Length: 348
Image (cartoon, rainbow, N blue to C red; front, side):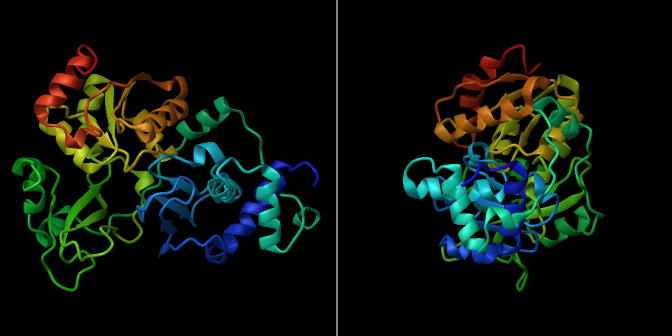
């Protein structure tokens, strides 16, 4: 096979997207289809989280359209669908598959060859140019469809489920976390975590199953694209602007714990992968420094490295060490002793 060119890989990725359900089927991947994405457990690193990996079908797919939210596997294999296929093949092989192995699989699936792919011009940009391009954009925002008042009327706040798990009642009221007790609703019987954008506009929600018989455990509202938002930025933005520091955690519960410990400039990235839109939001928030509190395990360390690479020299970075796997498992006293004390002079 001749040397692969970037334009051939881009063309191949676009053709794979056109046949995405068939591609996933050929790889033996069971998925859940949403209006703008397909979700499934990550087949690159393994695992059973049904929302761990996402392939988006909207937006500018020429720049890549898949994300592993738990271990950022796309950073190793690139974000286009050719890289996705290569990652899956690598996992099955037990070692990294070559570019040609991935190309052979794709060409066979597409029933074509390199000569028939034609050309698709792709601008080559270096890392510095790419960063300038990212920071010059604004995150995509859609017109408001549901008001916060309507959300508050539809759920019972605070959610007893999370009170029983150790969160304070006032915290759940602050973040509007409640139970959807109404019948015949998409989130019926689930604890609802509303998501607001930086201007407090409701953009979607995440529902957590209360009963072990309710599947899936986590359910995202239709059309919600978590990579476009930072959880809790609506409440954290004043403190970020005041201190010049943004504290990054993975999940919603982590944000709640940090708030209970008095760290009000904390935001969640909905997993372990920082997206371009989230990077834009951080830059526009006035943050000069990022405190990275992704999980204290191999995946969390990989996530921290991804955040630092993505932000490049735009920020100062701090990565405190702590004893628990994630900050959501820590008491407020432990957060103060193990994290805040390490950041003396940074957070104030």
